[in-house]
Amino acid sequence: MALGAVGSGLDPATTAVQLVAAERMVADQRHATTETKIKAEVSAVASLRSAMTALQSAVRTLSTPASGQPRSIGMSAPSGFTATAASGAPVGQYQVEVKQLATAHKLASAGHAPDARFGAGTLSISAGEHSFDVEIVDGKDTLADIRDAINAKAAGKGVQASLVNGDGGTRLVLTALDGGTANAVSVTATGATGLTALVSADPQTGTTTLIPAQDAQIVVDGIARTSASNTITDLLPGISFTLTEAKPGTTVQMDVAIDAEAQLTAVKTFVEKYNAALSTITSLTSYNEVTKTGAALNGDSMVRGLTRQLRDMVGSEVTMLKDMGIEIAKDGKLTLKEDDFKVAVAADPALVTKAFGTGDTLGTKLGKQMTDLLAFDGPLKTRDETLTQRTRQLTQQREALDRRMSLAEARYKAQFVALDAMVTQLQSTSNFLAQQLATSKSSS
Image (cartoon, rainbow, N blue to C red; front, side):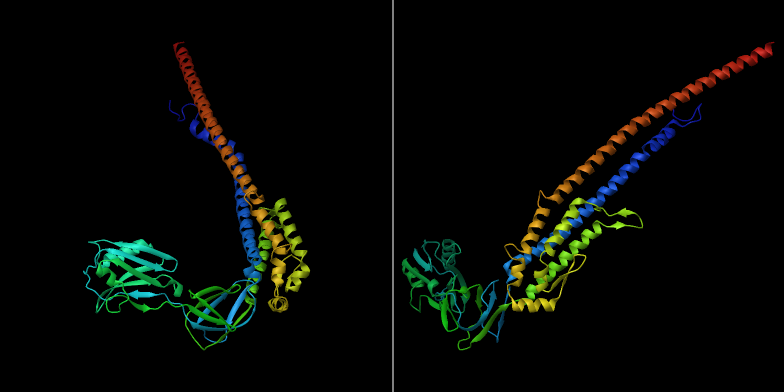
């Protein structure tokens, strides 16, 4: 049956849609309001998490020895070495002389034709703690074959074999992979005369030293130290030396001092992130008197508790912070006076560690607070799960509303179609009766 207007003058489809739209309007508005609120809370919680994560990072940085006890190194003149100092390294002045650098031993054979063959036999090679035998077989006894056999057996440890094509022919070169006299390369051979001659000590037919094995030598405050490596990490506690140039007879003064600038940077970052966290909380919990509307987390008990705990922790250390040049304003925010901080740290180099290091310190308390807040089972995670559940419920409510309204629309259509059919039938009956009456009158 067509659904267009027939007898009643109504369009059943259009009328059903209009009735359904009017019926679901209130529910749609309620759902839209709920969705807007949920999205606002999701965004607010994300902003809060971001601010607290940044604060946590700043606190962790201050809690590490690298920030609490940073060190800087200065040189009195250009030197043949570089040095780095770990946090807590002893401060002081040191007189340093680099007498010689460590070098890796390098041997080379005499020059030969590239396709020369040396016969079968065994090479015995050692370099430091690494020693091994290399079997050379007939048919695999060219310089390239010998090089490959040595490298396969060495497997990247102790020694590396290579070929160099010089004016006098191709030479087999053996290079120690570690410097120092203890890692010098030694090679002997048994077997074919050609093979034994290749690695013999005869300077005419055998190997010669291209670079001698040599230990590094450094003198610190008159105390000599040798090393197989040009990197020395255990000469002074917490200080690593990298030797770059031998300068015998040249002594350089090395100053190890507290890096006040690094401490200042870390403290400035903490103050900025703490203030940013308070500003974020203020924004998320504000109330607009003009519009009479509150921010997404206005009146939220979790945020109120967090604010109180942060301000109580910092407020309980007002004296210590003041000694560091940090003042607390009425709104809880911090102000760092850099000049006062530098003076305080110069007088007490351990001041930052006392405030933010391990133990019962402000850093430990704030760190625990941030860890608990941001934990996988913490308040913010719980809030996320709650908001996710509310979003899921809202989706289910909308789907249920869609189903109800779909049924209602079908019901309305059916009712109006029936009404239209009934009106049409009544009109037909009315027309018939009118015709009968008219016929009756004309007959009489």
